[in-house]
Amino acid sequence: MSEQTQEKSTDESANGSPKPTSPNADLKLDFASFWEYSEAPESSDHVEITERYDHFINGDFVKPAKGRYMKSVNPATEEVFTEFAEGTSEDVDSAVRAARRAYEKKWSRLSGKERGKYLFRLARMIQERSRELAITESMDGGKPIRESRDVDVPLAAAHFFYYAGWADKLNYAFPGRTPEPVGVCGQIIPWNFPLLMLAWKIAPALATGNTVVLKPAETTPVTALKFAEICLDAGLPDGVVNIITGAGLTGAEIVNHPDVDKIAFTGSTEVGKIIQRSLAGSEKKYTLELGGKGPNIVFEDAPIDQAVEGIVNAIFFNQGHVCCAGSRLLVQEGVAGRLITKLKERMETLIVGNPLDKNTDIGAINSKSQYDRINNYLEIGVNEGAEIYQSSNTIPEKGFFCRPTLFTGVSQSNRIVQEEIFGPVLTIQTFRTPDEAVEKANNTPYGLASGIWTDKGSKIFKIGRQVRSGVIWSNTFNKFDPTSPFGGYKESGIGSEGGLHGLHPYVKLK
Ligand code: NAI
Ligand code: MG
Image 1: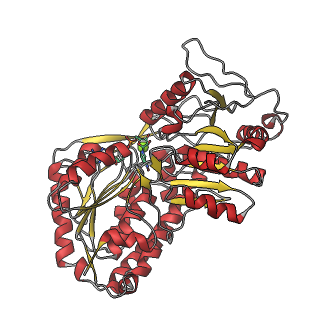
Image 2 (image 1 turned 60 degrees about the horizontal axis):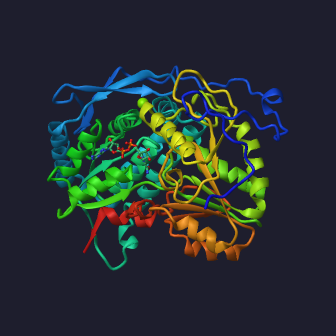
Image 3 (image 1 turned 30 degrees about the horizontal axis):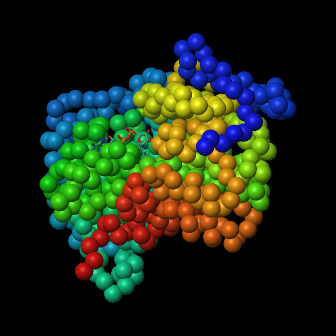
């Protein structure tokens, strides 16, 4: 049954696609007319981006064997940001060979204390180049500079610091057992948190004595190549870290290389399943961090204003390109009307635009294909009979931008409720009883992250035990810390990253 809230119906443009509704007359605040920020763009003059980037293999930047390059676009301008090498089986093979040599001759023989020193150095050098890395991340991928500067880059450094600390204490991590490295790790990362996902993958692998071949996503390869420069500056032994660029085919070459001992993948559930199928029957270890459709559950006794901030953070952070986003709001009936009105008012104040502007809340959608995918879901939602609401913000004409969007009047079986949209799009459902909230929260193929908003501690524990989800935030959302494990149930993946748990996939216990 579809739940009703008092929304206005959506205008439809001539071609039938959803058109943003203008700010509702019932919203009394007109932020645009009395509250306007001047532009505050971060300067990118000092950031050096070369015209072309090569692979990083065995401590050297190496041209691709087939000589082919791909383009990475700045999604806020639609201009080419740089070119990068397209990795083929030859490139992957030389990277894996380099990683194997480095593993056998050098890295696995170093003491934990020595490995730790390198990791501390990498962490400090990320901090030293943090401004450059943040700007690069925002230009290559479209995320607001405030987020790359205050979240992505500091957290990436924090992951290296954290796992540096474990490098010489592994015997305490696994009392009574002898942890040994796995060997050569193939690591494939997505475009939503490029440098941070690199840190999640490389830091624990190196701390435990493994070497790596990592492939960044094809829309955001540059910070990984800047990290390669950091590895050189840090004097990391050749071949310990190798970066191969390219798209899905290059990723598949890494997955299928016979001399890779472990695969760590973060990305879509669809590709996760392909990888799992190709690894079935092999001896390779693997971890898969896949999609999500996180429920954000707001009870009547929750602090409503805080919950509104939490909802905004849960779904509009990083344009909603977050696997653990709170993309399904479940709100208790008695407060639904009030909460939705406040949420719409808050959405009117969100600034959508230039990712390099320090005022920007919502930057550019990462790529044209993701932009099309999100717009397709907006059409699906409208065709499924849901009511769409978009904020009335102005958005730049050029670039891939999407207004923050709500869908009300949705039902559990709608595709926009079941499928990961990976954009600034929130579906809203109501519930009457805690049981109904739990039933709806658990009713998708995913189980990655959830939020619970209530004044009652006991309710947090009771509901938290019933919601099948790897991460549960209460009265907050999207909080990350290297000491805390992260992973999901069901189609959200296999294995955990972060914290002590994040060491397990990178060791064999004797
Ligand atoms: P994707 O899963 O294709 O890309 C992630 C990474 O996997 C990239 O580095 C890509 O080059 C690589 N890859 C692609 N095919 C591969 C293969 N067969 N073998 C090995 N590596 C392969 O994700 P895509 O197409 O960019 O995004 C589509 C949807 O996936 C998004 O709309 C979103 O719903 C979801 N997604 C989820 C992420 C998450 O963190 N949970 C991250 C990225 C995408
Ligand atoms: Mg790009």
